[in-house]
Image (cartoon, rainbow, N blue to C red; front, side, top):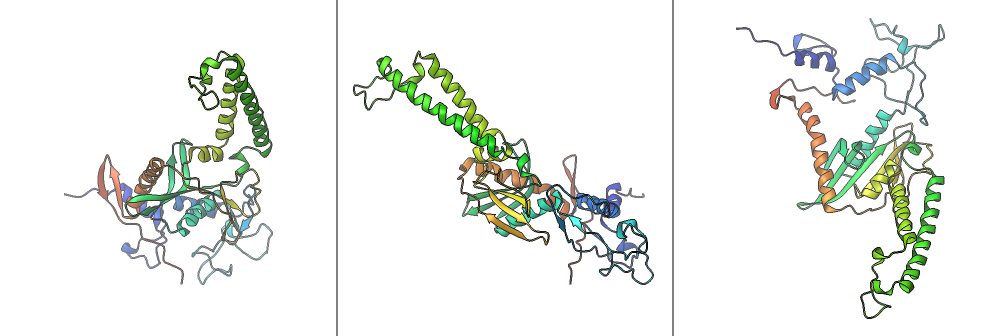
Length: 335
């Protein structure tokens, strides 16, 4: 009886190795951590000469691929005729063009930055209910058997799209202040015209039930104040995560030179240089997330990390049943 070959295994080999070492391949296998990384590498090789610069991102000198000689000259017996490795000008020296600081690189930097905080747990692509979408990186730290702290990091090339503009924020602050002054004035009027709303024997120390007031202007003021505060807290993604207190610390990973004036002051700012160095230019404020929300975020991080853990150990789930496959070989470390 002949056993059927697993088609998924062939797909894995075609994506994760350039030569099959088990079939007599003499070269070192080129292996990637995930399918997404392998596909990204293929696309990067095809589009390296396209001079597309990411918005607000500068060029970055990325380490050359092991298959490409560092000096730009072909090795013995090899040719480098690929357009991705040559200039458009004829007879010009062949060289590899620099890659931009893409959003994919910034997302990796977000994970690296949280890892530098030495957390007990770490995951990428964690679903957050406040955004109804995954965020780039989440970490948590333990103190004994309880969660002590959680951190969240977002990567962005254009932070202005994630937050309110400074002009809108100033306008909302001004309007909220005006409505709060009006509310205080109307409450003073209610205390004079509706004394029955105070059930205490001592009017100066009593708690007034302003909600039962017949003053229609006061209730309109409350509704408008509620709408303005909601708009202030939930107009942008950064404000929403801040108001929800999703994590104890919030960080934004940006390319060096990006304008972050629209980012709320409670968010920490980390800049990634073209040399792939992370600089924390503004520390994050301690928001103080609730214990229940810490547990929810840590659980979401564990769920997000499950798929990567299974893949790294050569396991896939088929209709809920674990199937053992070949473990992806790691890329050899640089010497």
